[in-house]
Length: 364
Image 1 (tube, rainbow, N blue to C red):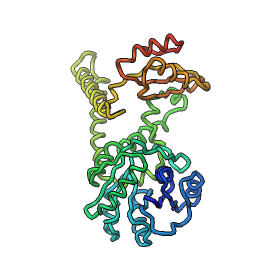
Image 2: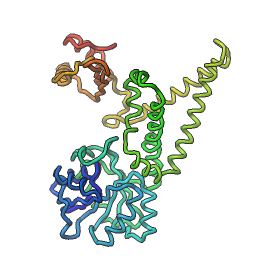
Image 3: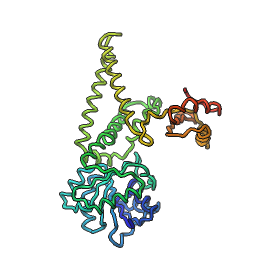
């Protein structure tokens, strides 16, 4: 792959361009927003000059509803030999591309599962896709040449290719991405009705639950609209679970102590919580292992330069490998808590060794 056109210079598009540039591919940046394109250019993601010849691949980093019209326009201009996109919905763009008469032999749908709640070229980075799954969705007319070119793109970005059909992909992301985003947004919206004094009580749990609600509302509205039916079905199931939990809580609230209603309400609540815990445990973590394989040691850390580095050095000196890290900041003090995740059988030993090194370890 010697040349590429990146259409859309937001977080994903600019990160793709940076990754390709690192591998020696010449990249041409195209965006309806000239400021975004020039920003990506200044970051070293490529050039805003028009490609002098047909490029090997064009990457459409645009919202799902824009994929088909942009594809039709690029194909009419003969911009690339192969086309792919990074939209998080695959069925709608394919149907719309067919309706517009696009040549699907040169098209491979794509979706890198990477990014975050923030957007824009300024937070792009070349290693954004390292080790992340990148779904490729070839259609029946897709040529072998086009698929191989898309696979090369994924490899150059350091991602892991996953081949799916469009319908399977859209059902999957409705469950693991789209519906959760909307649910988190709805939970965050509840905070608009409470006093600031109440919000000062918020802990890391609330921040974790509402973090992705900080994403672009206009972008996410486009994504959800493109996968609306499947997301609605997930929300219907979620709503039924919420009503079940609410009924159980009402039984607890109105039942007599040790009465049958209170007992049933408690059982229903425990079942809801247990299903949540079981579901959480199925999410694969490092090396595909379940996160229950790791446990955390919680350490109080001052908010000053070098403290985290000192903690990590002490963990390494004990001979423990850090599998993951969580940081909870204090709203009132220049301090925080760092949860260092290690394999379960090293937790108590690590806690004891850190105490010997004068760290304040919570619990354990």
